[in-house]
Amino acid sequence: YKVNLIIDVENVGRVVEPIIEKKKKKKKDKDTFKGYQTTLDLEPEKRLERVSAILDAVYHLSGLAKQARAASSLAPEILFITVKKTYNQRGLHYLDLDQNRHIHVERLALGLKEHQMLQDQLCVGWTPGIIQNETEVQKVLQEQGIPIVSVLEAIEWAKSQLRDHL
Image (tube, rainbow, N blue to C red; front, side):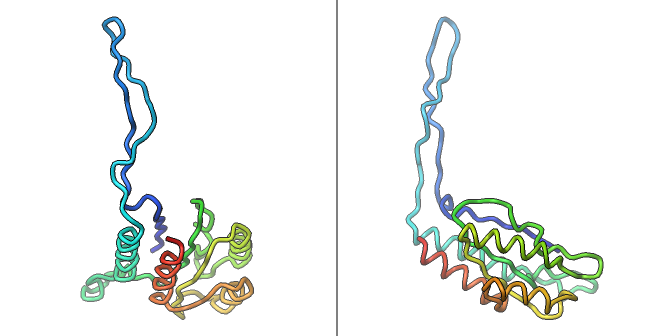
């Protein structure tokens, strides 16, 4: 399974509503948009608690799948985490596997270079034996200076990055 999860940390615990002014003009109502107002805005520490809970949930996605015969686990085996200032979907296909469980290393290298140029922070949680060209992929990651750690360490890395940025 492949999952893409984006967490807009700045908007976790924030509610912004439009300000609409109603005007009556000759039997017709006319609504005028006047901007936005923030009606809820949690402090950074509360935001961090919520995002940390989401990241912990991702790590524990395995549930009870291993207890049923022929069931699949949703536990992440390879986790590509980026902490970025501006949302984009670059990286969505970097870890696609072909029918032989190979990752396209040139595509991965190009994408990682783009992340570096955007000054995104990156970390990869890794479980050995999942892909066939593991050595090639790890070499590309190491050449780009991207930490390769266990999946749980990658989750903890993301939490520490968020603490440093809030």
